[in-house]
Image 1 (cartoon, rainbow, N blue to C red):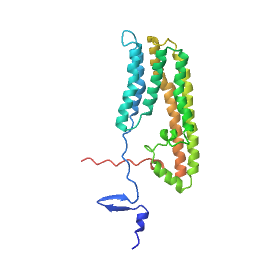
Image 2 (image 1 turned 90 degrees about the vertical axis):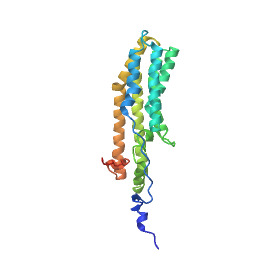
Image 3 (image 1 turned 60 degrees about the vertical axis):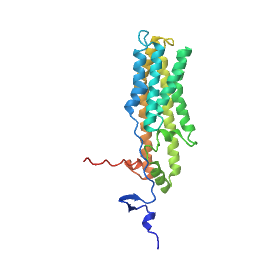
Image 4 (image 1 turned 30 degrees about the horizontal axis):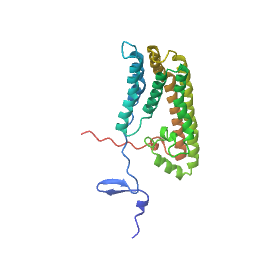
Amino acid sequence: MEADPSTHRGLETPTSGLEVPIGSKPTPPQRPKENPWLNLVFNAVLPGILLSFLSKPERLGPMRALFVAVSLPVVYGLYDLVRRRQWNMFSCIGLAGVLLTGGIEFLKVDPFWFAVKEAVVPMIIGLAIPLTLGTRMPLVKTLLYNDQVLNTARIETALAERSNLAAFDSLLLHSSWWLAASFIISGGLNFGLARWLITAPANSPERMEQLGRLHWWNWPIIFVPSVGMMMWVLFRLLKNLEILTGLKGDDLFHAQPAKKPKA
């Protein structure tokens, strides 16, 4: 007896009251989504407030205020790791920056080197994006072409069917360079802003107040434009994926589970 040809087309067949496409893989459980508001509060807003208002000698003092401020990205990053089983990139960057800040404050170096520190982290990320393209974990896939958001298996199948895998590699290369440019520009802006705001000696209350102002100004001057450029790169990537795959809009993303009707 010949096999039912429908099994080769992935058509649905009833099994125990459920309809599952033959040969398809079960949809992996979705991780909880990152909360952008908590990310903003714990990695930027609260550290800035603490550095601004608790660093005076009659309050916590400079070093204690710095210690409390640096603990917030750590606590939130660990909480997010437990909740989503995934490292929070912004908490890791915030922690690295804060540890460097603590080292600079402890060594009492010239404010110029603090400005260098502000530029180093985003510039390293920017340079790493194109350099990791040939590795197993390219950063552009972590930041933009991420399986937690996009249905990469379906996209790559559609690309192969249309013989557009080479064109996709070219698209990913261009997206990498645009993304790298956004981080490198951010690093330059970080340097200029730190040189403008950080002038007081290390470990002084005035220095901690300036660090607090730096945290506040980072968002409207640096973070918002950088995120805007990243969103433009993502939008460009999605529009070109639609052209290369023939998929439209929501077809590029994982299907959302249907909501159960209320009793």
